Length: 446
Ligand code: SAH
Image 1 (tube, protein in one colour):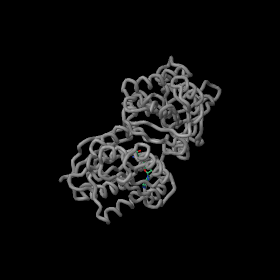
Image 2 (tube, helix red, strand yellow):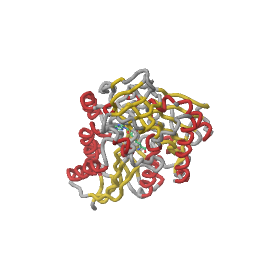
Image 3 (cartoon, protein in one colour):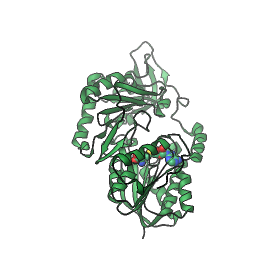
Image 4 (tube, helix red, strand yellow):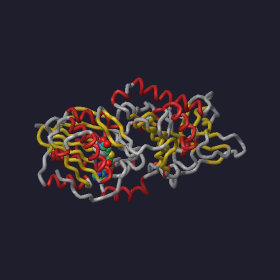
């Protein structure tokens, strides 16, 4: 089948905005609406510089910590004693001097400190991190994640009690992502512990997410331990995926969608499938293996599409049933509508349109746009798998956006399943921000 000419060689990250016009609109608004920037950071008062470093909160601002939310915003801080450096561990006190937490300090971030521990007796050292990482690994063993293959998120930041630290495992390669000053400070210790506990052939550091800039940290990308094999692959539910840990998006692959991809595969038999924002072909491969009649996959990254096609080949799947298009999905969907193309199953898994609530309004319009078009391209009785990985859009708002899209598309649709990230991406109850990925499976009336 045909492979259209590449339009763009960029590799936009899922974290970034999708859709060119949308991107421009958001960029313009960013300066005025995004408060999570170093520029917008109102610095806390300096206390006694000769005293032991300590953060003292304003009166009443201890409540969120008492509910065990791990972030301390600069606005909650009354003053900071001593002369701490970013990454240092500081005690946090309420205004009466009561201990609240040990936290990693970052002078350059709007989130001035992130909590390591709620216990005064804890010492934040290599042993502390060894225990935390061991607990995270134990949780994954309990959840039997390795039954589905050799890829897994072994550390999921705040939700595993390790704010700012992500570690993904692809076979015997580990990819570490440091998103804030705390893990940055403990970088070598963390790498040593991971090496000791998991003996990977390589620990690769992908500390190049956009969020690093908001934390005042430089981007870093390279081998931390061992040597990177020429090819890295992850085995997932019997399918093999090549993972570009050095240049691919996030840490190279989207482990969070593992179970949702499998569910798509189960429902694909005999269907014409459209996979939008396909990256390296995750949903497409599952659909093909599940017996899809045809699969059209669209992404704006030519590099990702090339890996996707390699993935079809290494799994021995029938490439004659596949069609690939390097395009902006916002434009491609309109083209398909104008061509009167129809599908039985559509996947919409766009990048993060709303990193924070400040982007929610603009992002809502983008989600509505693609979902409205998606509904229009479905045959009666067709299925829409639609996702949002935006922290700034909660489950309720997402469902409302989709309801509005169905209404404007003139279709009746039912939610047949609600989806979230796989269990190796847990959500700490006291940190609802961790529930970034939400999905709906909708069936339009026949
Ligand atoms: N579903 C994938 C992950 C999708 S990540 C999986 O299961 O692995 C989001 C993808 O959207 C990325 O591959 C990125 O290149 C692509 N993308 C971002 N903006 C886009 C746009 N406007 N049009 C098409 N693709 C876009």
